[in-house]
Length: 198
Image (cartoon, rainbow, N blue to C red):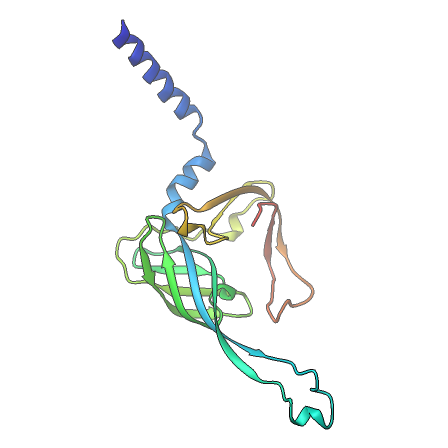
């Protein structure tokens, strides 16, 4: 009887687990391995101000000076081909001198910037690899207002602590959104609006 009871419990547990599966859990399970963390190092130029900078006499002796400093940054991306091409935002890798990609299994790769578009805030990276997990690109024209959207990423560098991406869920509330003004010289046109916490 103990064996039968144990078997019944196992079957019930399996049935409960299957009943909790839905489109979101299945999508997250399928695409998580292709989400990557991106750590960058860039050289930032700083200019120190002088208290006497505007003074016609003392300003000559106390001129502002410039210095360079290494700055670290981080972000997210996702692999779009099995041979290691990665799509990310240009602002993540802007002026980077070193780019390191971290996979969900903890492996790290040095990445090379292949292309970038500052205006549209998109960049393409490449790591050396074969048969890597990847996410095929969809068609934005197929999007329906009101359907679910899932956002995965590594917003706070959490791959250093836990190798799983963060997941947020929302709905598509508008498509074809255009910002009237450019922000920092970037053009945001034909955007998809969602309430997912990104």
